[in-house]
Length: 149
Image 1 (tube, rainbow, N blue to C red):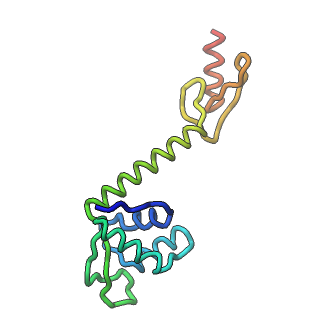
Image 2 (cartoon, rainbow, N blue to C red; image 1 turned 45 degrees about the vertical axis):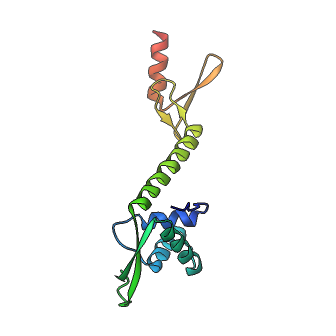
Image 3 (tube, helix red, strand yellow; image 1 turned 120 degrees about the horizontal axis):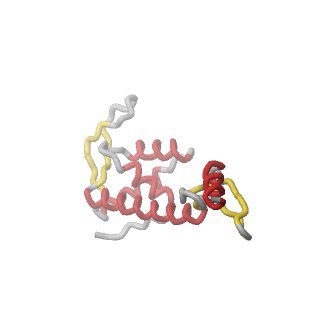
């Protein structure tokens, strides 16, 4: 099985669109990507990537596929993920999730009192020589009360 490079957002989006129970035509893929990004990819971009995915064993073609487009009654080629393709998407989602989790971890603070992860809503109070972060005024008050008793 050959390796497919997932070095662009377009390629990742194409795989996510194909991660469905329903066979998708190249046109359907382009429309779904356009809905998400606001930009419709060209057929010169879609079909070479689909060919690459097919030769790598990640997708198969469904000849005679009836498009979801109700105005177009022609039979088209549809594409859907093989088990290897589904495994690729799962692995991709796991890796992307790990990257996002790691980045968010850098942005988050933990409440000094209860330990909850904080992104946006934070309350600060000086404790000793440093500012401590709390998730809310209730935790700050509870911590202050526990320290004074």
